[in-house]
Image (tube, rainbow, N blue to C red; front, side, top):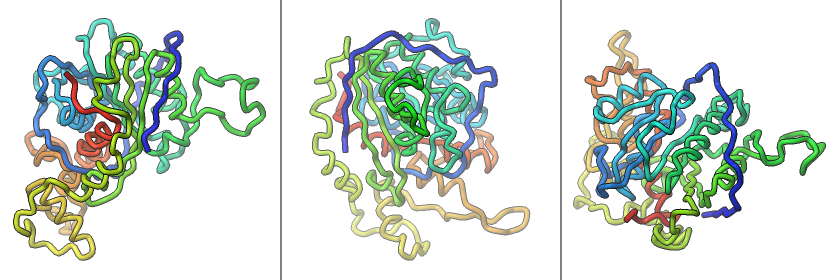
Length: 359
């Protein structure tokens, strides 16, 4: 389902200072889908993209697959994914800590992307919620960046828990408002994000997408939100009504429509049992064989989950994270991949939300 929000804007949001500059650490929550864009350069010149909470660049690749454009700066605090960014985009600056960036001094952009930390809203976590003491509360700094940069389009990704996690926000933030006496906060994290975007003058559309709906051999539910600056952006630039043929897009992508069958060619001799149809479909979509899911440890010979397989399952270009030249350990690779965004899942979400091109 595709949903839309349009609320009159108000004053900019306050930013909650963070003294601890928290990092993001989530392992194994993300095994994801394919990407057709295999470089950091898009197909539409002149469109500038700013990337927050960049990770290994998966969300940006998904945006570029649909819109094009060039990433002109990253903001990524963690050292390991920062190495990946530096390896693939050596000429793109990384401003590091989002709490320390002076947004008036960075290059202006047309599109702002980012999946802010999910630990405190994830169904797999402690559900501490979104406030100025949690890592997910770094959304406030994301919103502050929007208020200064005023991009034409904002693309946000997060976990399904965003729909139900509690949040502290300027809407219904006092005990005498709507829901007085309730045992929990009235507003949830998604509501806080949408309310903040509305206050900043952004209309929104959002949807939930499974990685399997983008053709991946596994589910992975994620929420995608687009916000456009209602004062400068014509919604007709998105190329259609929200949800235009959303069901058809899901079905065609999940079935690998338009992907050559290679005359039934099998890419891999590995036996996948009941997973074989999904694995073989993904092999056809990516055009390369699935690597073994485990590798033997050099220390004790025991087989452990392979980062190379994880990278393949995400649909990232071969070696995007696991290239030895990047210099990450196995654990760092798995963490970076686990925190990553599925480019094809993002691209499908954008098309479902009506984004076709940026001209």
